[in-house]
Amino acid sequence: MASSVQRAFDLAAGDYDRARRRLVPGFDDFYRTAIDSIPFEREDEVEVLDLGAGTGLLSAFVAYNFPRARITMLDVSDEMLAQARKRFELGGDRFRFVVSDYADVPLDGSYDAVVSALSIHHLADARKAVLFGRIHGVLKESGVFVNADQFRAMTTELERLHHGRWLARVRELGVGENDLAPALERMKLDRTATLDDQLRWMREAGFRDIDCAYQNLIFTVYSGRK
Ligand SMILES: C[S@@+](CC[C@H](N)C(=O)[O-])C[C@H]1O[C@@H](n2cnc3c(N)ncnc32)[C@H](O)[C@@H]1O
Image (cartoon, rainbow, N blue to C red; front, side, top):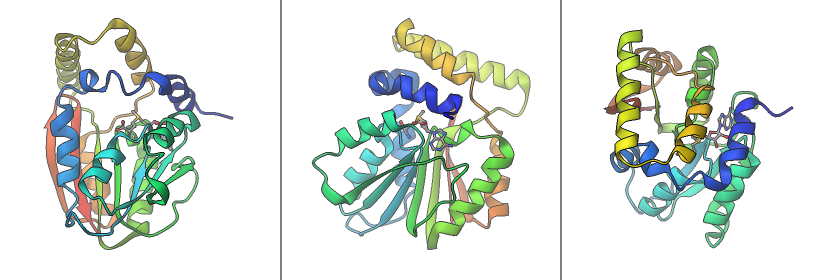
């Protein structure tokens, strides 16, 4: 049976890309930092796995910055991946699409980079920690994991402040209520974790050179090497 997260994104798929810049106020820096955290040369033929790839937004930045990368986009929502298939339809076999739930189905393959944006915060904490171990397991030696995601502040008061600032900022940016309302509805499914916990799970999974390169409002980008 489809999970509530899958259903929410199946429903959002057709409209997902349109409001992204307004819903993620630091959009350019957020995705730019994720790309800058991939420590390879532009011409390297890297093998990349994008977890919760959705419509392929993060993968598009990867593909542009690493034109010889082969990218596997994995998502539980067939509808979201259908948009990704359209986005990359002229890209040939450089791009692969896998409909799967990364929480339930073990990852396979061997990758230079595992990347993810705005997805892993949908998992319960214990499953995030397990996933980090699985990601470590499918990385090649010196491979990198980059997670660009939401996080929960250290206290309830700070969380309220961060969320309030985010809401004020997206309204300043002119997000329409027709985009904001479904986004707020989807956010009820969020299971965000503190940055401290996430970086600890990275260490426990065996990552080294763990670095948090971005933190703004409710968003962060961190990475680690195998
Ligand atoms: C907010 S979207 C982000 C999409 C894309 N990464 C981006 O940056 O725009 C989150 C995506 O994660 C997917 N997702 C959430 N939980 C998942 C899971 N357990 N397994 C696979 N995909 C999942 C959703 O279906 C959705 O497409």
